[in-house]
Amino acid sequence: ASGYASDKVKVTCKGCSISSKPDKDGNLIATVTNTRAKECVLIVSGTDDKGKTSELAKEIFRVFPLPKPTAYFGGKAGGKMKKLDAGMIPKLTAKLGDSPLNVPYTVSGFMLYATKDGSPIREYAKNDRLTNKMKAIIKKIPKGANLTFTEIKVKGPGGKETVVRQHNFVFPN
Image (cartoon, one colour):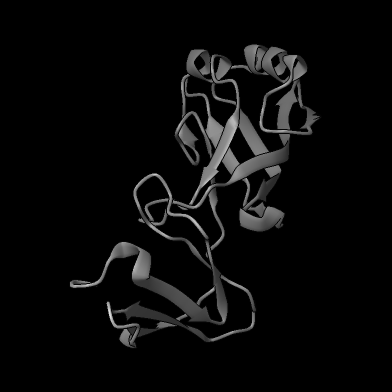
């Protein structure tokens, strides 16, 4: 808004709400208010020294739902892992994979599934952290066996919870 004092520049929108103060990087955050909306409009206006208000910019943004996040155990979404490494990882995390979006997600629960002597072992956590029982199970899993995280519940912006796909890890021989 070149030529306008910063206190005379206003950002409004249709179909979304805007944070009243900039974040640490100086950006305002726009949040879509209608989850069925296909677009929202951001309008920047400025008031000059004579009190005349002018529309400086009007941008239409298409709105899409966020993709499901991916859960990670030790920075991996599955595959081979050393048993020793697995025993030292304290929690599961979640994010939008390789997306440039910085959307905060938290794991709110999951189930660990393994087998010991042919019998299934299941243990449930009510947050992102492995329980002491889970850590003990991991220590006793034989080489070549599988470790599976399933029913991974993830909370995103606004507190909406979703379940992401299961992840399998193998402890090679």
